[in-house]
Amino acid sequence: MKQRLVFILALSLIATISHSQIIDRYGINIGTSYSTQIWDYKLVNVDSDNEYKFGFLAFLQAEKDFGKLLALRTEFGYIQKGFKNNLKHISEEGIYTGTNNDNVILHDLALNLGLKIKPLNTDFSPYFLAGLRGDYMISYKDVEIEEPSSGLKFNIYESTIEDFNKFNIGALIGLGIEIKGLIYFELEYNPNFTKNLDETGLSIKDNCWGAKIGLNINKLTE
Image (cartoon, rainbow, N blue to C red; front, side, top):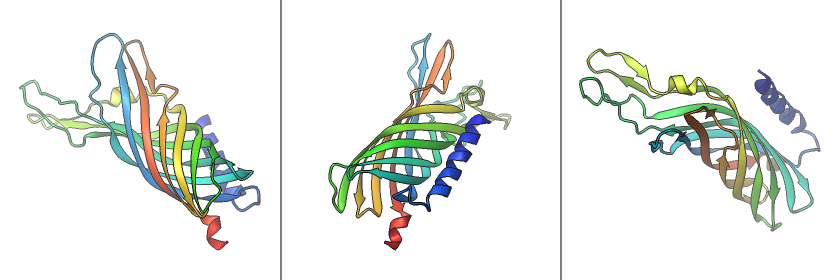
């Protein structure tokens, strides 16, 4: 509940100050996430079969300049994390049952705070971004299997995901280019500091990349 309140307050803050002179740029960005999870089985030698999967992301963003070369950026939005499952399920009869979907999808709200470094103050300005991201999992979609003989359906990872920490913090590192202060393209990397799960025999961490295109809405009227 406390984490939800933080995100709601952050969204309200961005909406309130976006029309004030405190903010130099505000807008939206959308793109794709490319995520997996690292499952570390501490007591046995098991290789994780999880692979990267694509997802969707969308953020509101606001920036405040500190001189010509530095800016502080905050973002609030939605991002899909999770992983592509390669685990093959074999029934008691020795039959491969397959899956109805192959991706575990975590639906997260995210709050980003980063320092934007712009070495060149030009119309086509490259920049570097370094900061933090906080994620709060609001729901998830599990991988489902169906027994061919009985027709019964089962969720593979539900019992583990239900024990996940809903709130996690990670680094946020990005490279981008901004065109005339209006449009920007960005690649980002978001490894977690905290763990989704940390038990005696298993620890789990998110690992996520992202690519997005953004629009500074207030620059449209200038």
